[in-house]
Length: 115
Length: 113
Figure 1 (tube, each protein chain N blue to C red):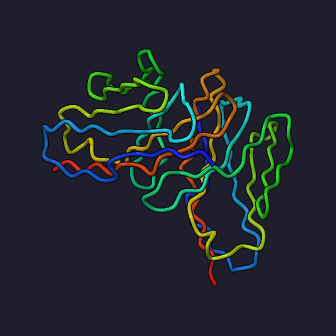
Figure 2: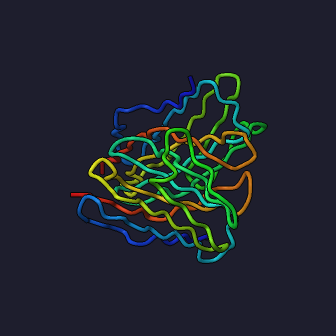
């Protein structure tokens, strides 16, 4: 099956630090990847759609200058949480799909804890 | 407003029995609906996809139904095993051609040996 790798799995850092999370599709080319955030016992909330070679599309209420997304190749998308604060602490998960109407394949998530 | 509702209470079920989970949605018209399994601290894993013109889909011990009139999907695990213990998420496509999904909160299943 399709494999999506996400790195790092856990980050603990001080307030004000910027944190970069990588999402790689290992065995297929993903023109589109998605970034989600999940708080405990809550649903996955779509943050943005990452498009290879173009700007990301952000969901309503998600600050694009806070959450920088780069999708420089068909196998790699990155999410940078800039100047992170404690309220940014959450579980961040990426996914990739081969094409429309197909399942999404998820990474194992990044647990971000801002002190 | 748009809603996807799954039971917030965990389903405790005896091993060997059938677990049935419900996903109800409001103000969506999905072309397809998906079910995922999520274990603690892990990303979701795809289980089944059912399209709007399909009534039922099966995969091994899993069965999904989709009623677009009732705006409801049922997810069944037959002959449940302790290894089936997890949280199960339903997800709807937002039907915008971009493959964006909206997720329910998930329903936890605990299979008791």
